Length: 534
Ligand SMILES: [Zn+2]
Image (cartoon, rainbow, N blue to C red):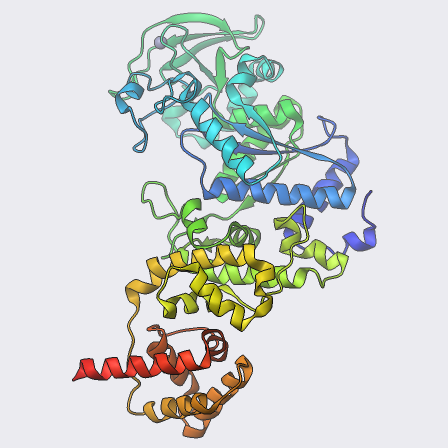
């Protein structure tokens, strides 16, 4: 059942904005496939990565928004472009010499260097599906070669042939002068040597549904051509089309209604849209998202290797924290770097803790509603990741049980969220080991700060409560009374206790670690630092 328009009006998150536009379009015409059809594309020359996850996740969020708003079902095709040729041997695969002799062939016709699947792209396609399944995405997988060779694209390929010059007229102005004459939408696959990168078109014969090609275009020194020449039908996978036309061919054939893509593909999407119209179907609604940047704000590129892998993120933060990062502002370029993981983990926990208290409409707008499609998760613990990270940091242990001992004392209800917290502890331990420990340096308070620190420790020595807010207020009072810069005072405490210039709310930390433990730690650190100074 569709949501009431008065409710829809209040839904503002970007997936609703996208879904509303799509609903407007599909109100005027029935989708070609019968339902609102979404597509995501995948290039199977390499393994799926964080960008693959982001694109599929975001697409499913628009689907979810569309479904709840309209009460109508949707479908998602995950399309793998496995008829693409392999131009050079990737660095990170085994059996390079096996691949060398197959360079120039479509990925689906090259043996699997890992020896596990029927082809190179078969292996990558399998990895993609395992990847998507692991995250619970609902999709229908489409491999380019089964579509071409199974005749699914035949009607569209006939239309490309019939509209050959019109399609050339779309693409030629985007090419340099010397490349224009040779450009053709068709890329015949040589029947003799099997390569797609060495052929060129000699003539089209729309009246017979065929083209004539020759295999005489060696690629640099690495891919020889065999000289074969023939006239072949454009159908059943004998010929593929170049990628901008290929995109349009899919849209036309399936009747794709929605597809998103990275900002780097805006121009390609515009050209593919024009070609889709020439083929006889309106193009899908598009949405471009910004690219991820690295820690220094540079574009992430596979060749520099400055990106962050999905596994790396999951080493330090739960999947849901990554989902939240991807959910926020897809139109803005965001830094994808390990230092944002703790912050996103805590934002996620806050959203999760609040979710149950929201009314239904506000729940529709919460990231939790998108990130957890089939459940209403709760989180009642008083903890967060930042506090855990600091606890782990002072405990100097990798024993989860020891950490739990402290957590239970601080928050007896924490065990209700044991599954979530266990995951957080493990990740906090990883984060501490890799990023905090190498930079940890305890420092003695300066002469100016020493009396303030002593005053705060004197308070702790007489305090018999365990209330984070009371402790925080006492710390403030000590700083204020001494007239020192409060931020500098808290910095001094973190540097003494944690060996870091910044930290969590001090009161929370003391309550979590324990008043006596904090006092003992501060005294031990000061004694050790003083004796090191001699
Ligand atoms: Zn050939």
